[in-house]
Amino acid sequence: AHGWYAMVLAMRGRFAAAEAELDLALKLDPLGASGYVRQGMLAYLRQDAPSAFAWLGKALRLAPDHPDACLLLGLLHLRQSDPGAAIE
Image (tube, rainbow, N blue to C red):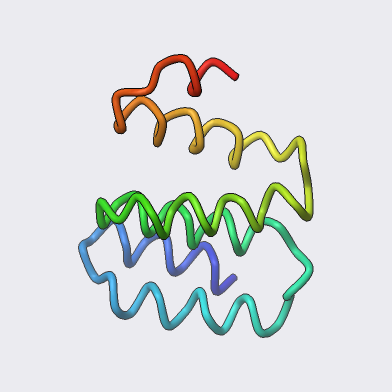
């Protein structure tokens, strides 16, 4: 629930509140990849590519085929003007 609420907050531009909710979600489920994906999404929305790559890397270590992490990583590579990496 905290993760989804965080995404609603992020979409409304309330990034600090979203981050606090995601921190709580990760404390409750530190082994769930979705929390890390959502942190990556928040970083992506903030246009913080290094943090987004780091969060998505953590998610993919936990769940190598996580579809949302793979999609977001591809979008992040496209934003970085690296279409070759996006295709991988």
